[in-house]
Image (cartoon, rainbow, N blue to C red; front, top):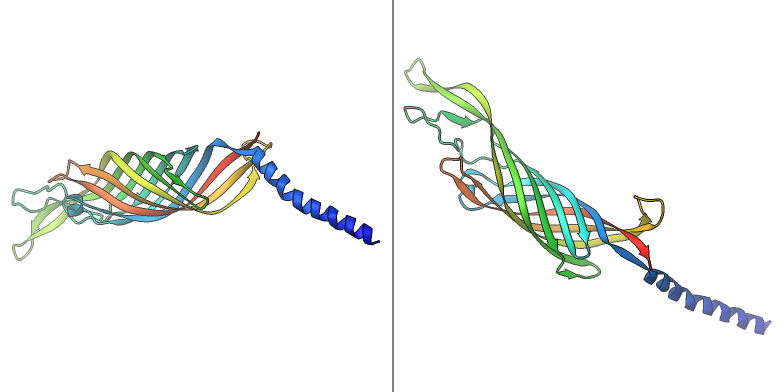
Length: 246
């Protein structure tokens, strides 16, 4: 009986000792494919600098997009939405013959819609944190309504403004942008590969903090304005990489 117990204990110890080795060997045989697909979704804020700050205030941003990772390279497409407030009620400086405002913004907050494309490279990566600077281009569109003003004399002979017409206005900007993605890993797990019923993929979720700077100019304003929009976004990001076996 004692010999049988010793033999059983030895067998159990052997299994417990070899199991981690077998698991590590199995993991070693599975490697990530170089191409990974991801997304990001979050909120943030930005404020203008330079002469842009003469016409606009900062605003909150809603942001999202997709990422394509190839080893340490990252190509990302982002979409931003916000409503910066006007500081200047007549950015085109349209005046009548008496020097009075002939135009006034009908909306205090124009709609900002932007799309950016950036290419980045992960310069530092650990088990928990990675840092990826990126540069690229951005295209944005500001849209708002303008009141066209006429003046009429009131009973006291004073000029009173009257809205004669309302029209839509917009300004487009195409310029450069740069950012730094600071990814903090939240968790990771193996999932079934969604593209095929064979194989598995490795899904990683991250908290992504992204400071950014984008240049903008509006030449049609009077006077023209330009400067940088500086801000930061906080996103939930996910990355999916297919696994292959050696």
